[in-house]
Length: 88
Image (cartoon, rainbow, N blue to C red; front, top):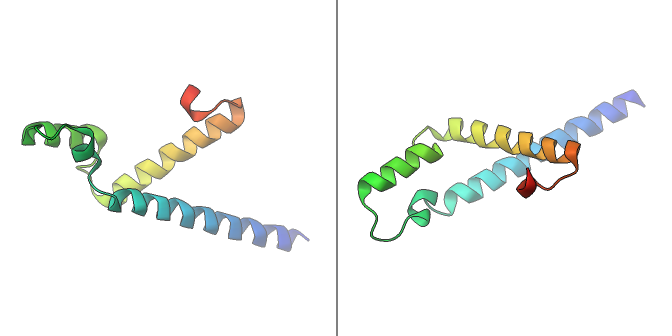
């Protein structure tokens, strides 16, 4: 019975990792968030500054780890407090 539970937990963690990776990839493929957030007449310096503020100037693997760990912290906090992510 313990072996069954461990195997199910391992499968669940793999699926969760896959979902998080797919969501991150979809967000990255949808375009540059900094360019979307700024108005069309924004200067290149403003675009570079916003990318730095958002952490988009870092390598993709670093962005992935940062994004996935912050997502996990928010989800865990919401589960423990019972509040939605928007109210934390």
